[in-house]
Amino acid sequence: MWYLFAAYSIAWAVIFGYIFVLVFRQNRLKRELDSLKEATKQKATSQKGS
Image (cartoon, rainbow, N blue to C red; front, top):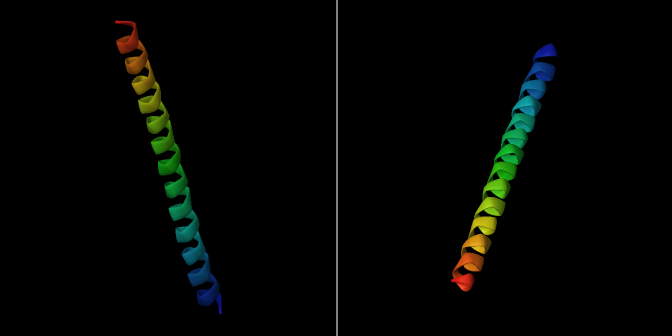
């Protein structure tokens, strides 16, 4: 039965790894989106003053 345990362990490791990658990508996209929002806000502010 050790092979069953090994198979489940590998499956769970793959699932957790995939979730980790998704969370990392989501955080990176959120930072990029926040940066773009800030740049857009600054651009709009500078155009109003001109």
